[in-house]
Image 1 (cartoon, rainbow, N blue to C red):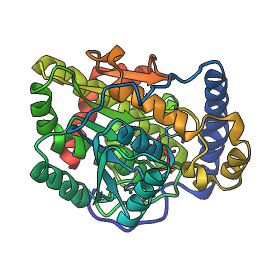
Image 2 (image 1 turned 60 degrees about the vertical axis):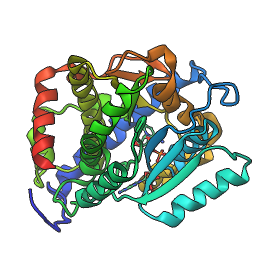
Image 3 (image 1 turned 30 degrees about the vertical axis):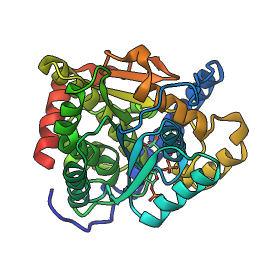
Length: 343
Ligand SMILES: NC(=O)c1ccc[n+]([C@@H]2O[C@H](COP(=O)([O-])OP(=O)(O)OC[C@H]3O[C@@H](n4cnc5c(N)ncnc54)[C@H](OP(=O)(O)O)[C@@H]3O)[C@@H](O)[C@H]2O)c1
């Protein structure tokens, strides 16, 4: 661990080619196919935001929101009259997203854009501590921002970028905001929620040695694959969802944790896979759109149907069995303790 500017991925060129074929072609192709078929046979449950009770005075913390699924989540939250604190890399991009929503006719709700770069634990700490200082409540934490299939990169904290952006930084943010979520939960009858936007891709992960995840010489037999890094980071989100929710239930707190797959949606997330991402955009009408993805995330965030049941992994607004590894208490605990050490 430690600071490191290394940019050469672990593994030889040949090893990385093999890992690309396995994780990037065979596994990603299989995942894409089964998700496509699964989604084709499920309609998305939609809320009537005009009809459901408004949440004036309640606070949501959302990572991302500038584009993709996060943008539509933001729109839905504003329709419900929440105060939304957006954690964004570029304040102008956050403000532009809010302006677009306002121009579409949504007048309710209030927003605040604060700087947040998930590649930096220092930035996460500043973001979280600003919220603790300025707000007397947090009702929902939506860990949405993410990256996928990116080239090998170590963050300023020395971690592989998918591991840190998708998982570790959200782990830290959750730790910082947890006391506020607990105190807010104690004041109300409905529960406070933490929603980790994970992915069906977590099912392709086969993490065996959790400790490898945090090591710069990361990778199966030291080989690097951005595909595998994404699958693993998404499994980490489900493992920590299960572990934290079980702890909160033991403590008897009124906070629940959910992991959700929003659907396969051609967004900017796929820009890293070049022509394949472009093809997905051309075929967009056959996939779900970000509005539908946002509805699925909103279901985990507000639906009364799952009010007291945390620790769920959800797809298509339904409970689903996650990857078996996600249920392994020993792996959950090892990851949790490793994450505490990392942050
Ligand atoms: N789209 C899918 O098919 C799909 C499927 C399964 C799961 N998901 C999950 O859904 C979530 C949202 O994905 P999306 O499709 O909406 O992706 P997207 O369109 O690429 O949006 C990603 C968001 O994350 C933010 N972000 C990226 N790196 C960041 C960093 N270092 N610090 C702070 N913010 C950062 C981006 O902000 P900037 O504008 O600053 O870049 C943007 O707001 C992700 O967690 C993804 O893994 C998506």
